[in-house]
Image (cartoon, rainbow, N blue to C red):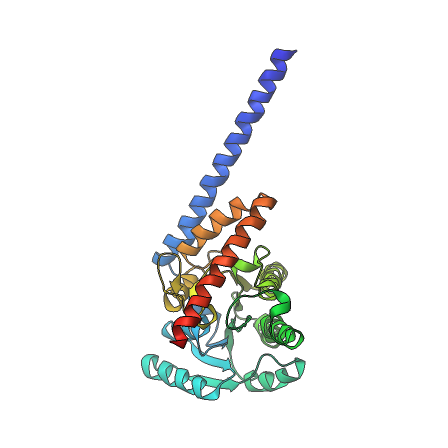
Length: 321
């Protein structure tokens, strides 16, 4: 009896080991396909349509999405708050790529009443791609919830900007994508979430929670509409050097916005949920596996949050000098 029990446990151990090894090998193979093969065989994004709409298009990741999509053959609708910046980015795109642009000035911290204007501006365009990028966080650095200046007003603004904007823009653009009868690939929606939304993240509590919403919204929407030819991709960057991160110096872990977006766009057609680039996917893989332990998860997130807070405070101090 003891022998049989020992043999049974031994077999279970071997099966568990085989499962873990196979799972890791499969993950590595998928990563190779997503981040290496995608560079050789890029998805032809032009099959989705003629125009791409990018929110939060005047800085950072949004600006880089607009510029990269223009290079790949799209006319661009840029939507953001500051008209002068919109015109400057549009001018640069037109001069560098000879693509057409259209600008819409909009403050995404507003409520549902701001979106009829957008719907009217977009109604005659053949929109193939929507990039829901616009987002905001505490400023100028991470902090505890009750230490956020004008917390009630700020929280409402963040939720409107980070969550409502994506839902409302999708509601405007998605119906026409679905109605395209001639095209098997009817549209692409890219929602820029964040890896800090994959796990609870102290000192960026509301930002983290809104990014978690955006990730789940994207994943559910993809399941609902993939049979209709719509691709919904959730992009979860780690740290990218932008105004939102106080322009942290780029390195092996922190990507520049143009480099990040170039790699992220290559993953379209290969995966509907991604950290965007190889560097961030490796970081995400390590964190997600470590975070299978709940106690370790909370400790690690606390350490990362404090490290980010320190780095951003140093960046703010450097700007003041």
